[in-house]
Length: 104
Figure (tube, helix red, strand yellow):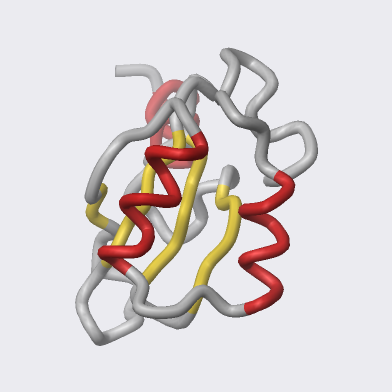
């Protein structure tokens, strides 16, 4: 396989620490991302060790803000105020191609 294609795939791995479309991260074990296609939000968690080899794991997939917030309440006991402001600013529905314009 072409090296450039491999390099591009690595950059866009949703499970990688350096994935570019992170909406917010809270602590070392939780983050919210926008999928690489910009059509859904994905809450992710990982183990308690924040090391590069620990992959982020998707917990659910959401197109609506209402569904996302309902799920976040089961994953995060409390959303910090800065991240809550980011959540509040998200649109009601995520749209293809425009998901990260203001939040990633």
